[in-house]
Image (cartoon, rainbow, N blue to C red; front, side):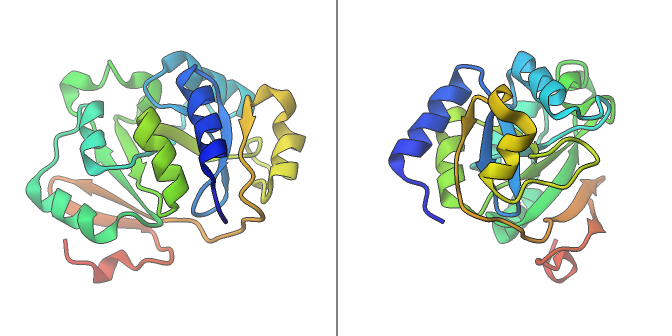
Length: 199
């Protein structure tokens, strides 16, 4: 899969203008918008018919972007992230109490957020220019995720502002874990075995 400068720039322009974009990820196609654009986030929920109480994953291009969401990073945690990212690993972190109200539109009441740094360099290049993006699979809730752009368009049509074709995708889900009170708990095993990574 090769993302070129032209389609990367096209995605960046749409996202920066508050639009929503279907992009390839390390696993499957996702629907995305700027994570800090509340209006765009609500639009993704509406277009995808997603449960309003379920937070979306947030894609980042560097670890420091996590601090934009009222989450402090300990040296131990940062060191762990260097070992697992970029890659198919999603990590859930608690939001500090004083920032919970500010980011309620993202955490949807669960008071924590999940982050992933994609291995796909083209997507990271987009995020470097736009800032963090929310990401949720390109399908209506309860249906099969789109494995290609054609399937994504059948779901969303012109309700998504931009489609980036990365070919056929059908990969295993990311590994999923949460870090709380200085402890790592693996919630879902994926290609990367987090129990074998020093934390």
